[in-house]
Length: 544
Ligand code: TEU
Ligand code: CA
Picture 1 (cartoon, rainbow, N blue to C red):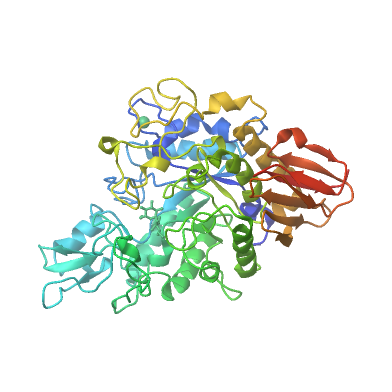
Picture 2 (picture 1 turned 135 degrees about the horizontal axis):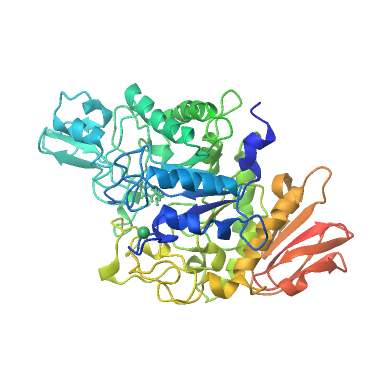
């Protein structure tokens, strides 16, 4: 039953991450909302090539929250934040998505709640409260200092002292985000019930926030210092996360989580995970028992903590090769080039001012791989990081000097004063007038139309949708591979990361260029040699 193709729709899907605050505002308060998303669904998929054609959306958290971390501090897992709408709006959003064949994933935040969640309010009220043990409380050291040396991902100690009861509580992120105690079976069951609540309302799955942190070493020992860390570098890298990140017990917990998903066939779990290719692979479970359906591989964004991955063929080839070699045979990788926590692709690859050219090759790489690709809103029109003046900065987490606001600015729909996003004042400032959807919509050469073509071609070409990945190769300038599915034409994918034109051998006698960053080159290929423009990429289909 489980391997019925329709139940495993996610294997062939292209997903799209919406940051709800920034997609579409429907009531002029400057904050995107669910009603706004409903209004824009035809842009995402109206069943025709005029739309983007995505098969699933993931909404960053939409739950009631004091918004200390913009929704990643959940105060009620089973409701909707009034800024975004109501449960009724969410029901309608789900129905409207399903009507268009779009699956809906919500964002499950199991590691921590908001400090305003009723569970934490109870927990902190007294040492004898029945929910005391739902969070991680410890006595101070004899000198009054925190129980261990763990640092918060957002800086500062991972412990905050609570005067009322004279103990510290653990928070891997902000102090407004206390970590749940997943060693308490009641917590696990309560959290499982929050999944069931949404599955019963028709939700198709969840992206799972920092799943690798839900279980720590039971004794909470000090982490060892990182010998490579230099003072002045980000503090969270000053120690090696041995005891509070990808701790072995996590990989057993994901199997129990999977069983809840299996109660609702056709649902999918996608873990936000960090680590080596082997660590990522472990989240999928094993031959005996499955873990998550998918686990993100962010290595195209960053491989080691904060080091940005360069757009260079040998590096990309290594990342693809490692993912192919490590993901268990029963599933597939899941890549993203952008998300709400990281500087946008164009900005990351713009040191020489040619980020926009590289951004055209990006969809050919991402959608040409064997994986469930996730696009991030605005990526398809080439949105870059936006400079945020100090007085407009919102994000409390200062990863970079300005936090993560630059990659979270409102979707640019048109050139009107509210950019088609709002009739009011947007919660974050807009970027420059261009790029926007309106200017790209009918321009055949636009990035938007390149993305649309890539997504729809992928539906058409079985080799891209579900084929194996073979003959990963190339050289210093080019990364290339072949996608092969039985009974379907093979597809050759080649990405030139150099700023020179290059020529590569195509492994077919007869073929045609189905998609190229230089769209004028699409069509019949007259030889077994393919010329790729500087920083260009192509999909070549076997046959005439
Ligand atoms: O992010 C987790 C997170 O820690 C990374 O984004 C971080 O940059 C990385 O671990 C460093 O290697 C998730 C959400 O995506 C983010 O928006 C939240 O702020 C965070 O969890 C807390 O819920
Ligand atoms: Ca609104």
